[in-house]
Amino acid sequence: MALKITGLSKTYPNGVKALKNLTLSIGNNMFGLLGPNGAGKSTLMRTVATLQDPDSGEIWLDEINVLKQKNEIRKVLGYLPQEFGVYPKMSAVDMLQHLAVMKGITSKGERKEMVEALLQQTNLWDARKKALSGYSGGMKQRFGIAQALLANPKLIIVDEPTAGLDPAERNRFLNLLSSLGRNVTVILSTHIVEDVRELCPRMAIISNGELLLEGAPADTLHDLQAKVWTKVVATDAELQTLAGQFNVISTHLVGGLHEVRIFAESDPGEGFKSIEPGLEDVYFLNLFKQQTVN
Image (cartoon, rainbow, N blue to C red; front, side, top):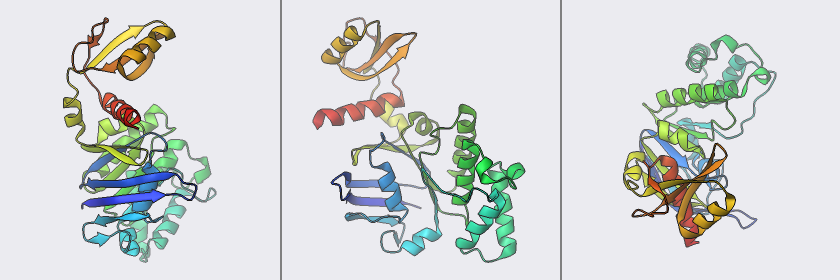
């Protein structure tokens, strides 16, 4: 299925312009939506999920008008928001049964089969009778995916799903998302660059409600070949000097020293060395360009 977003704008009553004439096309695969906190990602996801209306614009999922045919889109939608509530004293199996009824799955046998299959798929079978309040962060996220998969959705939206997970839980969760992305459209909204690099054939970067870049991660990296340079400096004063001279993409502490990465069309000298660009460079460079323009 293809999701087409055209001219979407949203301004909240407090004056915050969360989306600014945003246009985006998302095909049938895992799609990464990158942006810093406050970029407008959650506003966009809630709008696609029919939880709020934009001020202007259109959203179509194939032939379904998302903004006007909300009941139709909800039938094929699975949504894992950044924060989702559950009844803490209920077990996973009972909660999924309850949600399945709300999804309109009236056959008891069909519900039982679907819930058991989802608990197996999300590796929660052994904890199916445990109260949700006793679940770890990773288990709660896997339960969130299980509820999002009820009724075999064609469009799945996950908003910041790996924030706060330990490395092992994060890997398990990303592997689960990857397996889902082979058959349906999955939108992964995150500020974690590694999640997009590992999972998504296509991606977009948004910031301050605006689309900064859309494309395949490999193509965006190609455009930066031989244009990213690095240097290690010892003091904050040296770092500030370089920031005044060059387009600094990012800085990282390595062994107590500052590793500086800059963008330059040719060798900047000053002891810099050419380095292979990464998706993080693409991300930070686009944010830097937007800040410079604004």
